Amino acid sequence: MSDRHITRRIRGTDTADGAGVKLKRIIGQAGLDMLDPFLLLDEFRSDDAGDYIAGFPEHPHRGFETVTYMLAGHMRHHDNHGNSGDLTPGSVQWMTAGRGILHSEMPQQENGLMWGFQLWVNLPATDKMTAPRYQDIAAERIPTVHPADGVEVRVIAGELDGATGPVEGIVTAPVYLDVSLQPNATLTLDLPTGHQGFAYVFDGESAGVGGETLRRSELGVLSEGDRLQLLGTDKPSRVLVVAGRPLKESVARYGPFVMNTPEQIHEAIADFRSGKF
Image 1 (tube, rainbow, N blue to C red):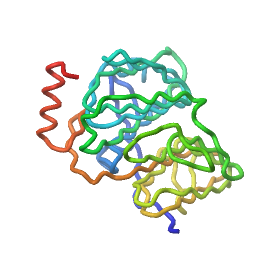
Image 2 (image 1 turned 30 degrees about the vertical axis):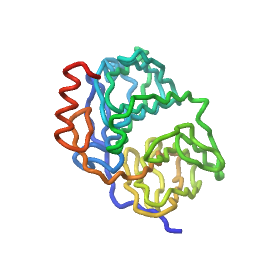
Image 3 (image 1 turned 90 degrees about the vertical axis):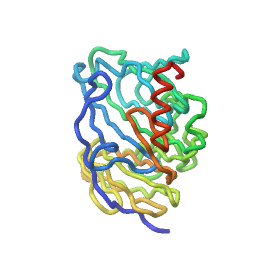
Image 4 (image 1 turned 45 degrees about the vertical axis):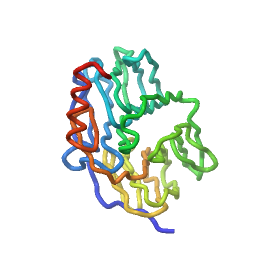
């Protein structure tokens, strides 16, 4: 058994996306362009409707997966194939864009807190042109476990303490955990050997991760290993722990298109412009 520790620390940068939604970009910025297989991690959090009300009008994706985890607020998604659904507190949507989709995510509220995450996960070359699909997961489908005193974990993907997350059939075999720590609580997590991983403190002032202290809005890139030690500090905190099998493939990116070569990017743009999505 070997413990994982923090190899890099990244703080989110303030930016805007969609039609002007204000958010904090953690992966996908100058300090951390990607963390194979993860391409982007955004946190959106505001109780000022002006920061989110314009939402994310229709836009394309090809070649990767988007994962939306809602903590507070209400958004509705819709795509050009007639699919639609609600993103409500505690719910998750794992969308496999595959060969191409046009979709929107629009707020269904005019006031109050809107809070959540969007994670982009790369697809291997063999799956980039697969048919699009959704896994829309209501809050009540996500198991909650208490693997140690003062610890509560929502298991979105992966396994913990006899519970299996509802996300299925993802080639990168992800682990996605929302860990709540009471003061001084301790937890040892098993993480698959070879998976690339990170921890991100999103509530409270700080948490202990791999023997070090991570502050709020700080991401720790994790070393190799097969277990991770988490420790509550003097106040309650929440930590995202995410890991996935790296693809180790070339990456060509252009906005909402992620392929393996520049030629494939040109093809994606041409297909989008000609209405093939």
